[in-house]
Image 1: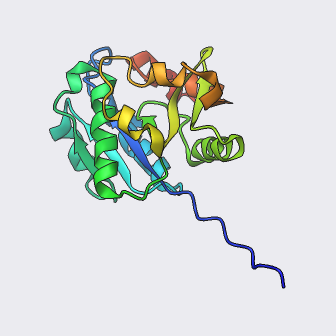
Image 2: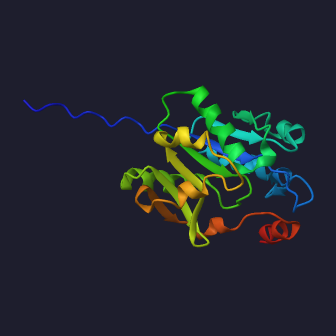
Image 3: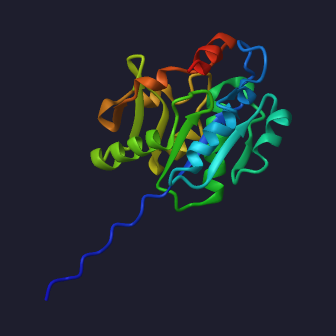
Length: 205
């Protein structure tokens, strides 16, 4: 008698939305700038919430007191990054630490930015599919000739992510050993919003 097939356990991953920056080039908190009627930070969090990711963590730093209220109605966890001025690494540390405290059973963590208008549940699905198909421990969006955010990291990288330092964030991890990174061509994610002109262009129909 044949052994019954065992079901593949679901892939469990959380999401970290980085929204701690000071927006110095924008001159105002870009997390709160509206695109299609929604603040950028809400758009990014909503995209993650519409995917299988759980929980969704939003990392705040500069302007936290202004940004926190717009997230109040969303089922997200807020992680404070007191060292936000250090750079992206501090925010990644704060976000992944919060994920680990929430659940020890997560298989992976998606790290995303709040200022990429093309970030969506479909983008997340592409990254998850690339990781599952390739078996590699990282899946990352590829644009501007290199890998970048959003990126999906398996649990084995959590310890490294919680000890990152400096302004570059996880760039070295994403562009180091190509054998462990599944690159997903997502050129639309090359567009991010750093200046008022960027927002004006993104808002045009």
